[in-house]
Image (tube, rainbow, N blue to C red; front, side, top):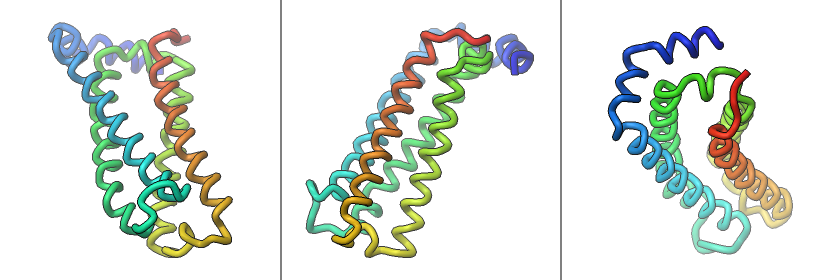
Length: 163
C-alpha cells in the first residue's frame, strides 16, 4: 500500500488538488455536512425504534422518508473522502491505523444499513413488535454508536501517522 500511496502522492491529480487552495476545504466542508445529514437521518429512525419520536408512523414510512437522505449522504461521503485521500494519500494509505479502523467500521455500518432495509422489506412487523422491543432498541443504539465511532476515528486520522 505504501508504494501506491507514494505513486498517488506524486500524481498530477494529487498535486493539482493540493495547489488549488479551495478544493480541500470545500471537500471537508461537504464531508462534514454529509456526516450531519447521515447521523440526523439515522437518529430519526433510531428515535422511532426507541419509541421516542414519530410514533404514528410505521418503520416502513420512516425508512422511505430517511433512507434516501442516508444513501445520498453516503455517496457524498465516498466522493469527498476519495478526494481527500487523493489529495493526501500518505496520511491515510500509508498504514494509518485510524483510517484502517474507520474503513472496517464503515463496511460494517453499510452492512447494518443494508440489513435493516432488507429486514423492513421481508419482515415489516419485526421493528414494531412489542415482544422484540429490547432487541430492536439495542440494535438501534448499537447502530448509532457505530456511526459515531466512524466519525470519531475519521477525525483522529489526522493525528496518527502511517507506518
